[in-house]
Image: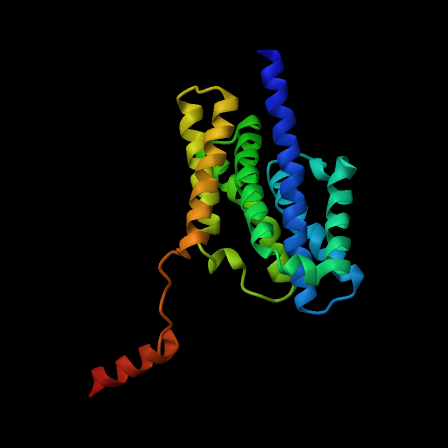
Amino acid sequence: MHLIVRAVENMLHLLDLFGTLAFAISGAFRAVRYEMDILGVIALAIVTGIGGGLVRDTLLGRIPPVALLDQRYFIICIAGALIVFFAASKIAKRWDYVMAADAVGLAVFASIGCEVALITGAPPLTAITMAVVTACGGGVIRDLSVNEIPAIFTQDLYASAAILGGVVFIILDLLHISRELQFLISILAALVLRGVAMRYRLSLPTVKSLPESPSKLTRVRKLKDKD
């Protein structure tokens, strides 16, 4: 049993590093869109790859954050940035593979974020929030860094997949399911939702823009009331 637990832990760690690489590559490509220099490519790769974990650990009081203690995370992010810098055109032709890797990273990060929060004694809703922060925080920092609306508010069920993964993890924890099964089932749940959303371009309902600002609409209403 101990060997199984150890094997699962090693697998999760490898998937964590794999997800970090996938996120770093997506961050580096955002830098390519704006034709940044190599430092800019590396910077966006790093904040995308480890940004969510840094924010999560800081909010939960895990100081210093794990990513700052394990140099492999930085090395992987820098490697992803360099790969994109020198082979962006070749990788772009296989973007579907990058997105598949990104989906795996999202699912794994969500489960790990939830697990870390529970270990620190966080309540269920906080744990689910940390699942989203871990999975999506790096992307939010990336988008804000280039003055864009964060993609999680506009893309097809990205944050929703992280929420689902967190919710499933919490439910299984309340049912006292083994940690190995918790990770496996919650990762699969988030991965399936993300995969289906990507395949069929599903998204949440969006709010329609107003014809005028609320203040102007209010003034118009008041004028009509006077008449």
